[in-house]
Figure 1 (tube, one colour):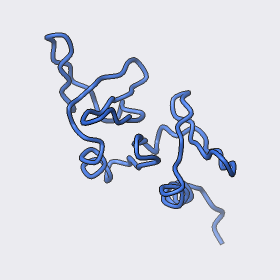
Figure 2 (cartoon, one colour; figure 1 turned 45 degrees about the vertical axis):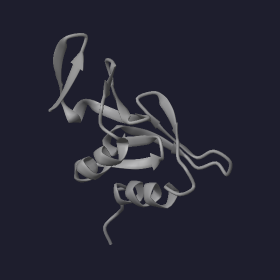
Figure 3 (cartoon, helix red, strand yellow; figure 1 turned 90 degrees about the horizontal axis):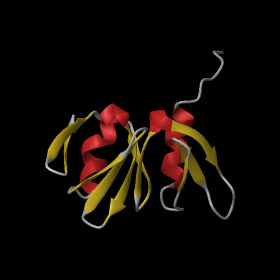
Figure 4 (spheres, helix red, strand yellow; figure 1 turned 30 degrees about the vertical axis):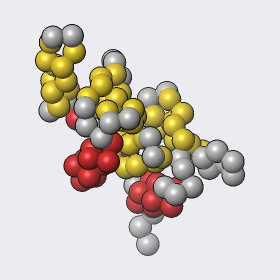
Length: 111
C-alpha cells in the first residue's frame, strides 16, 4: 500500500493498481485506472524499491508496471509502450532492457 495525501485526506493506493509512474521533478505521479496521485518520492527511489514487483524504467520520466503493458511499438524513430491507453516513450538507453523483460514474458512452445 502507498499512502497519498490529497486535500487533507489520506488515501491508501495498492501498488498493484498503479499502471505507470511519471516523474515530475522531485515528485512522482502515480497513475491508476481511476485517477492519478502526486507523491513526494523521486522516480529513481521507486524504481529501486519496485523493481522486484514488476516495474521497469522505460524512459527517464517513466516507470511502467509490466503486467499493465498492452503493446509495444518498435518503430525506428519513436519506440513506445501502450499502458492503460497511454502511449509512453521508450528511450534508446532503456530499449534493450524493455525488450529483454517483455521477451521473458513471451510464451514459447515446448521442445
